[in-house]
Length: 181
Length: 161
Image (cartoon, rainbow over all chains, first blue to last red; front, side):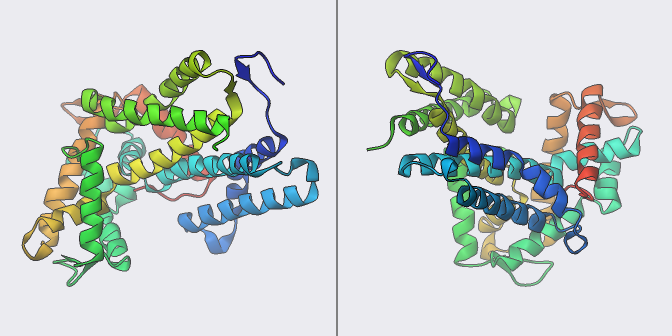
């Protein structure tokens, strides 16, 4: 539908289908969180829901020829529509499952009374304390080959670790985040 | 040649990046995350207005899809850079002799500093109030934490952090 000469509001069926399939990703995610073997494995749950989104979209295109993109530009737009949906939910999922600041608010919410800064640290993540973050992040960095050496004195690896740190500092400087924590 | 709608969306995204680069330097006290998120709809509306005058017709859905996709890629990367404890640990180690530090030093320099900054940010943003008894949630904070907890329970998320 073209509303006026200045704004073209025509929505291609292929893009509408991609957006509809992507919008329903929380429903696929909700089903996956009910699978016993995936319980507590938030990253896997999300990854599989993204794969399901892609598979359902592909299935829909195979079943309904009218929803197939007409040309490369429409295909690119439909893929961007689908990916935008997945990225939108990824950001929300990341915040809910790994949000550090949200974790602080939830600690206060669970306590139901005022807490000192030290108490928030100790009660963080249901009593695992803030040091959990250090253990978790150092473990992930070691697994990714960014650090090596003893657990109580980690060393940045000479190639991957240095590259990651330098890229981070460069990006932070470009974004004006150099002085932020 | 790039289709007109995709080109318009890309131009709108470039406007967003320029706005963010400027806003992060001028409005840092509001918190970088707030700035980059708030700039997204603002730059989109500004681009719609500007392009409807300068390069009509606007291909609304193609522009908005391209813009939304590029902005979400940017926000995902930005979130990873801005909030990442792991990257800050790596940067700290890079500046130390032999690229190494004790765990106690890392906790002090990265974790403690980040914790204090975030506590101060949620007070500034009105989610938490500070009193003689300590820190407690404001009504706004209670609303957000309650909604987040309900969503966590619905999706079987044990805890965040």
